[in-house]
Length: 156
Image (cartoon, rainbow, N blue to C red; front, side, top):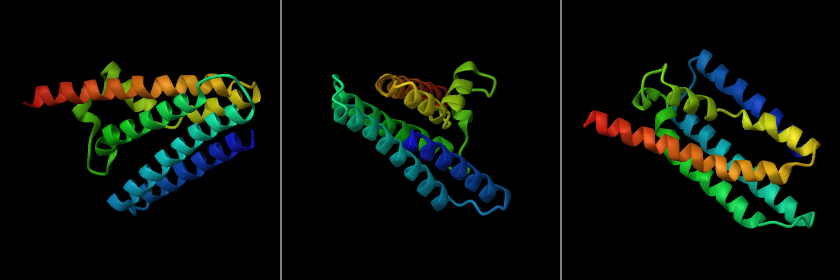
């Protein structure tokens, strides 16, 4: 519960920090990449921590594989999404703003998963949460890869 609470607090502070940088016109490419990288390293650490916690609690399951699957999924998403989110870049390469898949990418690309972590911790569902993340990261990565490939074909 403490970890979930701290992650939520970190997410709020990080979001405010980013908005302030944009509002004060202080955002930079280096700042974006630093923030983006640290955010994704945090996600990897959280997912690895959940896997380690499941193992430490003696819960049966393939926690190492699930933690690795979730972490690798985050790495793939980082590589796919980074260039689309960087300052000066545009998600327009993924299709029109009103497009259903692009809206889903924009929505799934934010940090809303942190809101699920706290209830999962409260109700003892961290293993199920890790399953969801391990599969969800790869589904999300596949969708973004598909949209990027489709956009490349349209540009060609």
